[in-house]
Length: 574
Image (tube, rainbow, N blue to C red; front, side):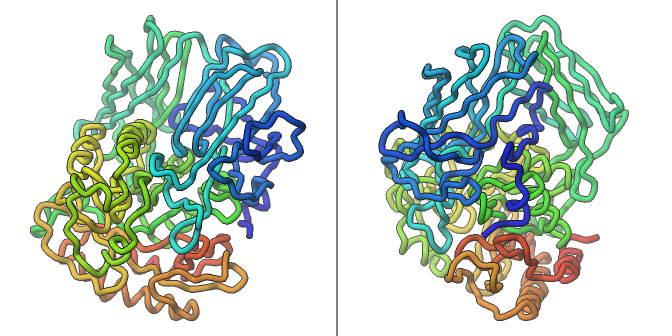
């Protein structure tokens, strides 16, 4: 089963676009493409007989491997490369966007790096580079069902709402040439109320000179220098262009310290809550805005967690914009950075979930929670929600901070979801406070679905099997963060023989009528009761799930554009 885009990939160098538009240098050499590959019980030292297409995971059709990986297997990747003439200046950095799950890196036979965790990037200094041909080896192990590392919706025994695992390299791999001392990161914090932007840099070395330039559509609108703390505030009062879904205007930024220069961008926007008719509601740029969106799992039948092409990401986002939605809930996954870039450019607000983990979840507790209101103290009953292992709790907390650092500069992200439906939930109140300290600029949905601890900015509900009725929520925003999930199986566009959904319908006409009835009888009237966020399940079918607006291969849209667009105009406004 392949998408249109999966049939058009350039196998010589798939996903060749610069991977991190939020932190970009002029120097770039992609290592995506075919690598030598072996799957064995130990690191492979023989003659490689297989090729894998990086950056697609071992289990996916686009990888050309399509095999299951056991927890005691070792994936050995090998790639020979040479640097183009004039590429190398002083240092060369090797970047991995994502490897699931435990990786060891060797360059020309020398061990150079170790990394653990499946959803975050890492960078290696290539001190062992030589002139001519270099050999890069990556050894990977993946215990999908481990209770320590974040795993998202992956499961060895896939089925229902749990999906085929992702093992090995599944994000882009690239090299860049840099000076001896480099800018390590930028933190860009727009201040909508005061019409300025604060830029903070981390630099490896002693700053001698610096320059910060902010421009809009090629015209310089502000300049400055970093102070001794490597920060700078640039006023924007000469040209104020707020970012919004209807006008996703972006400013460009260039930061130079000594010999190193990076480019980025930002949107001048503010996410908050305001009071309307006695209810707390979501606000963008100090004005109430209803968030009407869909759950977005970010899976593809041919690429798994990895989009087959850059255009595949754009198409998913644009298709939901065409239906009138202004929000995507990125569900239990961290996307490639280009996905967020396209949301920034197209004007799509994002609710970003943290990636869940932990041990096996109590099936009785999880499956009956939609019908029974349980009380669960998540500071004492770690075993009930899969967080008995202290290493698992430590890993989640460390990943939380790294996730914020990774995604902070994305204008589109408005809300962090800390825990979903109790999966691996623990210490929600403490971690909400920690997350707010890490990022005071965004709102927090602490416990999406159930096992509410009374903290965070949202009273967040999931309703599939009963009528939704808004209730008074005190000083928190009422959000329906999952609902709908109507299942329609489209012949010749399904992944398996199973149908998972919350209500089955026979054809597209019935689906359209049920969705119209749901929104007009429950969701739109609920705005008067304070409802401020509505996230329908979901963007596309995923494996057994057949409850998407699009089929899994993205070839069929199940609901006519005008049907959803009219509904969303009533919810959001034109």
